[in-house]
Image (tube, rainbow, N blue to C red; front, side):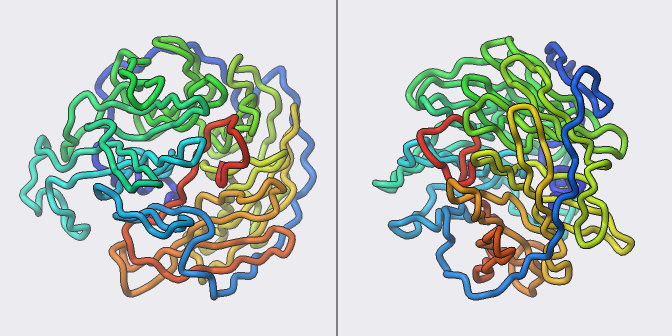
Length: 426
């Protein structure tokens, strides 16, 4: 599995292509980086440092992770999945596995191969034509108490679970993913696991659901060139575009704010938005923020951050003369302000691809868990192995877990807010 820088995985993922259908028309409500009407947030320089990483972490991760065929890091021990996990159609843009708010169930993305994968060979070398089916996505639900694994939706992918039990996901226009061309679908919502699915986006497109901000569903629509729009949906055919060429960093614990990252040309900005109205609350131009990673100016923040209290943690990226510096960035968010408060570089030789999906594990925002790739001779991911990092912000220190050779090693988390308590990784 490649890193997510420049969305390499999205380029290689099956079913991610250029849509030939008209885009769903939604009212636009986003400001660009040069946005008007909202003043910039304060931009003090984030305190730079380097994270110290030591080995010796427990074989059991400090929060649940999903692998190829198991959930690990559970109090009762690993649980087998009813099908192979796989999130090729949503990649890193939404969680591979999402717990219910009460923690009793986990909904996860599964993938059934119709053509055995051989990463070193192209589809044509495998005798697969452009219109040949290569796999079937599905969403399944695992009961953590009984171990029962149930199919929720076939030909479906990406799932968002609301505090009241409602689920949203993308139902494919057809069941099978084909080797070439886009895999189109409609966003549907169930009020409960047993309720019928209601279509919220009548026209099929390349959607990925992310999470709920209160009763507002946040989702991506992928356009030509893999540009992303952030959508805020409230009912069938009702919603607005929160961002054009934007990514979701995190949802506020109360569900009343969303932190987005906008891109315009080669410039990036963080934008705090009210998901219900689409109003901009604060904008922070990263180029003027003064933050650095490994001595290089911070260029951008990655999607998939975690928000607890008034703190957000996410991956940061900075270009260097020899490549890219990556690390962890801590952002302080108020009701109408955003500022960078800490930037922590990872040892580049040890973690050339950085650390992904940092998830806060406590209410104070002092501890987080992320995952990373390390070079290795084993595994199926182009010679890469996976490890978790259990990190303390104040100490700028992470404990590294043992290497994992699975093709998938992603944290189980629910980005939807509000929740009934501190949800690890929210």
